[in-house]
View (tube, rainbow, N blue to C red):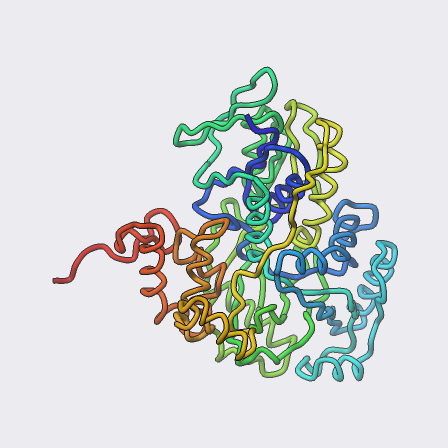
Amino acid sequence: MFDIAVIGGGVIGGTILRELTKYQLNVCVLESCDDVSMGQSKANSGIVHAGYDAKPNSLKAKFNVLGNKMMSAYASELGVKYKNNGSLVLAFSEEDLTVLEELKTRGETNGVERLSIIDRAELNRLEPNVSDNAVGALYAPTGGIICPYELTIASIGNAMDNGAKLYCNFEVASAKKLENGYEIISTDGNKVSAKIVINCAGINSGKVASIFGDDTLNIKGRKGEYILLDRESGDFVSHTLFCTPSKAGKGILVTQTVDGNILLGPTATEVENPAPVTTAQGLAFVVDKVKSMCKNPPLFNSITSFAGVRAYSDKGDFIIEKSAIAENLINVAGIESPGLTSAPAIAKFVAEEIVAKMTSLVKNEKFNGKRTPDYFFKNLSIEEKNELIKKDSTYGKIICRCEGITEGEIIRAVRENPKAMTIDAVKRRTRAGMGRCQGGFCQPHVAEIIAREHNIAYEKVQKGGKNSTLLVGKVK
């Protein structure tokens, strides 16, 4: 029996799992998909928010500001790329400027440092490609960017290196109350027992809570669609640009990614059963909005589009609490934006303020929080590259030409925690297939490496999970 089972392998579940391994606890994470970071942690903006948007005294405000201050050191420890690029909320009217003043006051109340309202001239100096119609902006220099799935994978991988267990393809179907915890049963009939359960199931957290007898969570989904531009246009903006926010969210943004691309989006579509698929209408809305924000956006350099579904609560705030109904169940739900920013702070709170009251916590003196980045070769010097190739010749073979990813890096991603079992899993860990050709050249070679390393038939290699095989038969 585990001391604690975390349900949900996203960034919230992953950071909580890692935090728990700092103590002498036997912990695991149950993930319904074939890999971690497959829900909203896979498809979001990757913004480390400054903290001016959340209502004062809310959990969003508290954990956003704390998480923002923690993120640089947290990412560095895990070898995850993080950039403090600052953010700008654009105003296009006097009414917008009034809203920005309110945001500035709110941010200062929340504890955000160095906020300022800048005029058109200063905005143009910072971002020459901003529309001439912009009259000013709220400048938040503490804003940043990070890769959400890279952070999730690194957190869970580091937790596994410190003893945590990962169970993929474990969709929770039922739970049986035991004298000292729960027996959790998957749809396939697999069973895991734990004394304490932490529900971090994202869009499914309401459903999961009800399985344990807690029907109080009302969690819905909001779809967002994005467009990604090639790194060739990576200097189009340097800060993260927001529109003045509305009730539906922070609106369309234009931002760099930590890997040098430009990201546009997201939409905010309220639908009954949101599916992570793009629509012509949604992408057209993104294009129109971006054109109103910036001069001559390089949309010709679009290399892909994607959609994500973000969970939110009818309470309008994070839910982070021990269930009042289900014994030994902790709900961490409705973690919409700024959830990614808040993740390290939420994890610390759950461990130190909630779990600590339910079981004794003894420091794990063997805990090692360091992790080597999943891909790194192209950032080495020529001398370092040659030295590494002497030791391991697989680093001398480039598999992904667009991103400069070597066979050695792909092998490492397939072997290390959490092991990459599919082509998309390798893609998320190494960026092989994320360049201009989107895997057109490297995908067959990545599949060969996966087949060889996992000792499976080449035609059995999956692109992204169940029913996604690339090969269906021989031509002749």
